[in-house]
Image 1 (cartoon, helix red, strand yellow):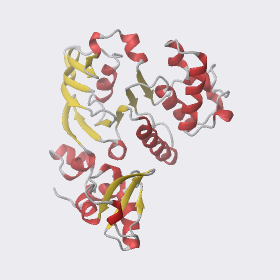
Image 2: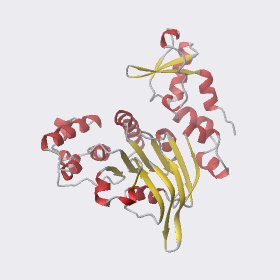
Image 3: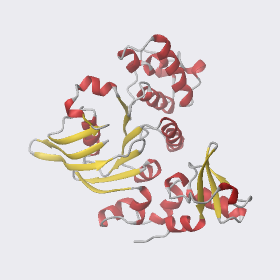
Image 4: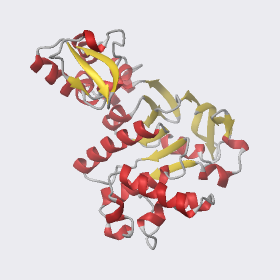
Length: 316
């Protein structure tokens, strides 16, 4: 997905001013900034709930402004804070909404619904025939994510999706979302006002202010090298601690030149979803200089103590 000089003007005022950046396929880009910075406006221009007044937005090389809006929205997943489930439809019917509109066969819809409910941690036999009012807020958010993924969209838009749940449930939903996104490989544009959430979830973070893009960078680079005083203040004075607590093993550079067989047998096995803090604790406990990073059965490389040191050092 790519924004090229995208602008939006309301009553003569620029809400978004020549926004340009590119989201790598299969990655999560988080738009973050104070209220009124243009985050949600930028997100809604992708599925044309808000029409741009200038520039172009490309998905798989196609300009969304040249597509019919209803057809466009059916191929883009959309998750909002309020979820917006249909109250008189079952959970299974809610999840199958877009596939039904696209004319999928009933058998395919049923199979996809069952797959997605299991994927988001809702046992189909227990939840498929329930109604939204019978679910907790966190469970409804999970259904919202499943519904957005139902038609296998290449892009998913998420606007403060976890903002209305308590911190414990929110952390659990964030972790579940990261797992699902890795499994599905969907390109995600995610809006939040919470810099900690942005750093935890984003492969790229776009900091916005007054409708302009201030800095666009991977989380580690954003924390280590804020481009100006506004970004430094926004990400907080405890940037070194944030790197340790919020960055994941999968979000830093791993050494892929080291063969797994060459690593010390006492080196801990680390998941890409582990935080650097957890990785550091395990590496120190094992007295190993490296940790072996494995995603399921796939060897990804090694994480070194020196890499963690670079991540948590305040370079500014």
